Image 1 (cartoon, rainbow, N blue to C red):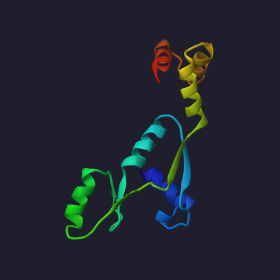
Image 2: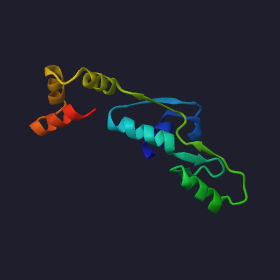
Image 3: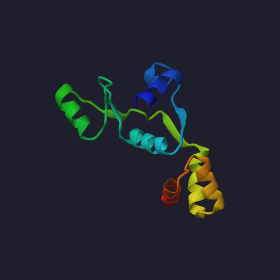
Image 4: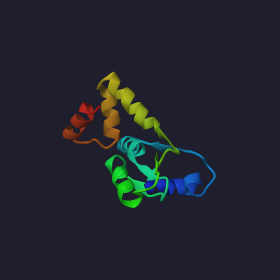
Length: 125
């Protein structure tokens, strides 16, 4: 979360004092999945600009910090256009085609060296 906010400040997103309305961020693999979860859950209070994990945290924040005020919450990172990197797309395509010599070579190139690691790579989706 701090990483996304840091990127937002560095590229000059309006929420952090700049003039850009959005930014493309390219992630690969697990960071892409985690980034997607963060983008869809983190919210920000429209009154005090406190960052919250969403859901019941927003309700609790409103009840404790702004009990008699009209408060709304926006997605904190609604300025992010999250895009999977080419390797993420390539790996998904490779797994759909099945495990053959080229897939095993690719996994080996990505440092899946032991038989256990190669089996794990083969079973991943």
